[in-house]
Length: 390
Image (cartoon, rainbow, N blue to C red):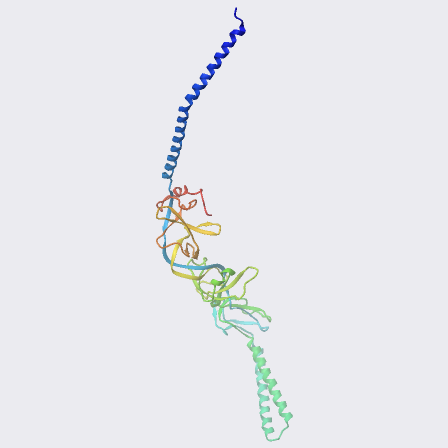
């Protein structure tokens, strides 16, 4: 009779050898599998390299518009604005209490210095002058008679001196009477135009009453204030363009008459007086735009401002390189006007510079020049990525 213990032992030994055999078989079969894994890794690396090469070959070109650099005249200007004013402007006042009997001018009339503007009542003053002259003539005859007697020793020194004194006092009285009569004639102190008449015939004037305003339109000026850092660009005699939009868009020509010798410490500006003169249509109070021409270059390299990109304190643009890629070029402006700048160097006549689509470009980026009339959407694809430079 066989017991359960004796049957279990051989069974366990058999299972143990079976396990060892299976492990050996698996280990032998694992070597070919390793070779296949290595082959798979090599293939993956090869595929990755090929993908990168395809990516380089398929780099998308950025659509841009370009302009060809050329040379032309350029000028630098200092811009400002002001209201015109007259440097020679006077108010005429009454110098005596009289009644107005005649007006000789009206508002808008041009007058010369010394011209009669109005006549005041003067009958009393004429009579006083006549009496003063008659008395002076009497004293003059007495003076001459006593001088003749004194030369012959027939009169005293005191009598002669008294006669001379009486004559001198009466001469002064005649001058005063002539001055009082002169106040009856109101005359223009300067040449110009009557801009205001404040009296009419029959008015009883008071001493110091305001009668007329006279402005010399030839003395019109515009006073502008230029930042102190631009003072080296400012000097008397410079040509100036003055535009009065209320009249026309074409400029009036003017000249820098003088530059203030001091700088306003509060505003940091220097005052320049622009002589405009009496050009047709210009008048005091008119608002004008002023452009002082500080420099003119006849053969400047004209770089469109549309091409410029600003990166903090740097200014640059993109030029089309010989390889068809964008080249970043730093720009240092020498002159600038409304549409162009003249660079200090780095660019040449005939260069193609990018004027649209440069936002987001990078140095060396592949570009495609499109038609100047291309829609903005075609160029907008290049915006939003990379170095905007603004």
